[in-house]
Image (cartoon, rainbow, N blue to C red; front, top):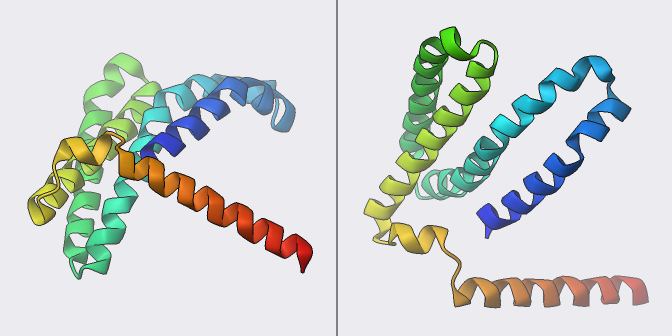
Length: 150
């Protein structure tokens, strides 16, 4: 659910990012817009892997979170150095994406081994997700109604 929600938010932002950059910043910042498109998948990877970070930290395994951070950093540096001659500044955006994907894959695999939850069920929506979303929306709406009446 985190992944799907983040994809929706990132897609909505990408649709309006150029006009937003023009309005809030200036024309001088427009060359950064393609970098936002390159880094969109890493925003999704970052948000999705933070669920695993919270679980590992809460289950007394913060060392795995540190290992994931170091893996991301190493992949980022190696990819930056390897891609810079070809892509220039854009290599940094690609390297960040590669690093955060490596972090997410590492955490998903370790989570799979720790819990036995299949990788497929981690990423594909299931009926319980729909039920959870429906119940969460109902609870949020009932609180909103309760706040208005108070």
